[in-house]
Amino acid sequence: MLVQLRQYKHEEVQFDDNRTTGESQTEDTVNPDAEGYFGKDMADLDVETWDTVEYEGDPIQRRSLTLDGVTAVSVPQDPIDEGDPALPGRTVQVRMEGGIESLEQAAIVEVQDENPQGSTAE
Image (tube, rainbow, N blue to C red; front, top):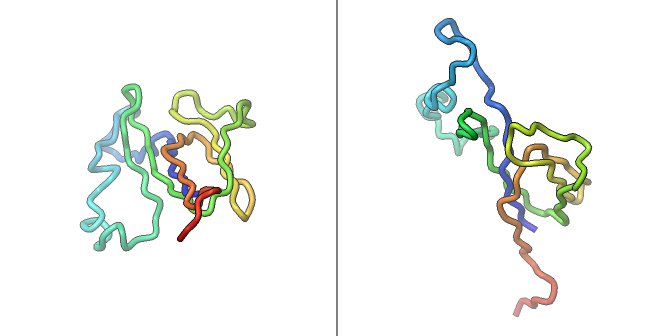
């Protein structure tokens, strides 16, 4: 299966002498233009990209994850880690050949079965 998720975390604040505690970072500071900053396009870099979005009036960070080769997806009713109630999402468990991975503060966007049972390729 192909699984697309969104994962959330608190904004990682980078303090400098011109900022005060509680002052929100601007989008340009958190996500500068990649080509101007790194000298190459983001598609050419192998990095995790977190975008700053607003949630209930506060800036948080969000990333999109696409996982291929997933055999099962579950959302435990009683997760081991309660997570952060100030963030959207909850613990999502994804089973793949290598084992089970837990993604905290995640929300399922879409799950596609690329080869559903009962369908035949002709």
